[in-house]
Image 1 (tube, rainbow, N blue to C red):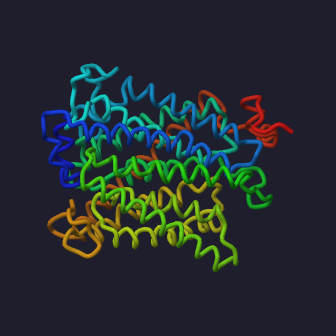
Image 2 (image 1 turned 90 degrees about the horizontal axis):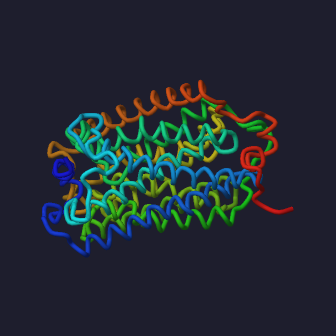
Length: 427
């Protein structure tokens, strides 16, 4: 099954060493490092980024949610997640032949790296995806409901998406390109965030009472950690220490920088001031958008993608909040959802290996960009439709077991005290 996975994605990964039968210490060292970097994105990067964006009375609740998700998903990944994602020949989901990592030992290899390293690397992707959704329900979801939601959503949404795109499933078969998670990570968390924000409704006082970030310093620190960790996210997805990883790292950095600058420029022009929240959010938008394309575009393509990410995600954020009045608390859908889908589409046009914007190697359909676009759009429709349906089903199911949203009184007190009986700061 794993051999099938790598064969299907050869056009994306360009890693001849994947078919070698011997362990490569250089590749192994890089994926070990990448695994640590991607976990670093969630703990403490995303936790601090989100924690700084909420009000002080909810900071611990966000940190707790990210920490608990990391623990829960790690266990689920070992028990059944890895097997359902990467074993079996199903079009939409794998099988349980490797439940509890049955058959995995010290000598098991995936390409040129130990299977244990591959498992742990993929686990960090599984962790950060539901953790990103936290930004949609921050400050108003009960902790118990959050735990149930994360586990069920991971099972119903992330695992099928992962298998379909990276595990040899239907979308891999038809040629969908998603190098590091534009669909698997960012589209799923973005659509999931939109559904849950609509389901829960607005926070008390939304659009009436100012709800500024309580700690901009924490936001900047968390954003910087995300930027650094993203090198493991994208360059690690080459699954080798080679030129593909090097190009992925370069274009990742370029897109992040340009996304940050373009968001900052728009904000500066519109309000006369450049803010740390703006430049940090633009950076995240640039990273999310380059993620699916980081294996197919070159530096010039990364500049274009980063620019579009900053501009389009900025206006998407304004539209979601101001026009539709949807309380996606920390802008998960307009930044990650819109950004991820934008990257999935843009790689069709800037991923040509013979063009100025490409990287010299590509998985683009031989029939050309339009043909690849139709394939990519099919991937977007399938992943987003299933995510929306499964997210709503998950919320309805949880509502039969426990209250999903905290009471207005508890929301006023803050989730730190009402859910955890702790305070982030001593008065």
